[in-house]
Image (cartoon, helix red, strand yellow):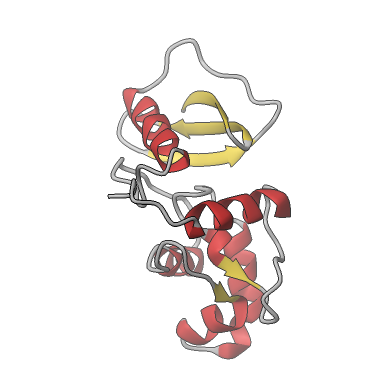
Amino acid sequence: MSKLVWDSPLGKLLIEGNENFVQKILFDQNAQTDAVFAPVLEYARQELADYFAQKRQSFSFPFQAQGTDFQQVVWKYLQKIPFGKTISYQELAADLGNPLLVRAAASANGKNPLSIVIPCHRVIGSNGKLVGYAGGLWRKQFLLDLEKTPTHLFS
């Protein structure tokens, strides 16, 4: 596993992966980087920088999240939430086919290993309030505000 640490606008982001795929993007203020890292990690860092600079709405670098079958289903669904939009945990569970799966869906959402890229920050409480974000609610608010900012720069 290769590592790259980037000082993003939200603090240190740990980007991990192998030669072929980015496998983790996590907020980690204590992360240390490898002296030599896979080129795909630098590619991811640049696309994340473009996202924060409002030059990008989606990501094209290869990534692969490791998780259970159910987590994979949830993470695939999260990738379908449009940029700048939010859904509730209740809507997430209902869209997955069972409104009773709210807690399981929220748990899978919280275990997302690819912050920002798999946009778990776009899932909010049924009352419209911010709840649950591994990176902290202030980061979730920042990301949602970034995505709602009208700009002509996004392509």
